[in-house]
Image 1 (cartoon, one colour):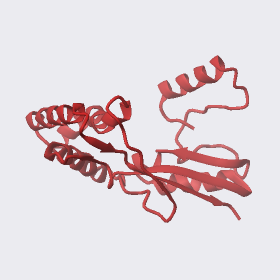
Image 2: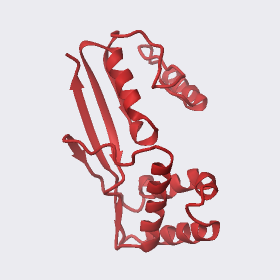
Image 3: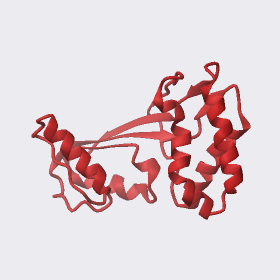
Length: 186
């Protein structure tokens, strides 16, 4: 289930290009899929709950979709651990603005804090995931500015400082803390 039409189109193209026939991609809201109840062996999501308000509605829907004995599996991020070293005030400011944006919009950037399997990655200079904080900030730029979380001038200055810092190969960048959680429906 995917809400974004472009993502659905790309996923369907990928399936067709790779001749994968046992997967269907549906466009819709994961909170109310309209799919038949207790019909699936597995319901899974990756980096969904950390990006939406009312994530418990998605989990409820996932549980409703699996058969008795079926599994629900999640892979989520926790923004608490995202860091770079040596420290940079601009990095911390940008991360703080994104956390504030999330909270202001009903999104829990720390939803993954459960007793489960934690995973952390280190991103070297040539890894595109090294700049995820910048990518999120740029994607949300207009919304962040419209909500007055940071001025446009400070946003530009902060982003520029983070870019310079990340270009330094001595800077250590750790990923978000990823959490894998799963459970079996009785």
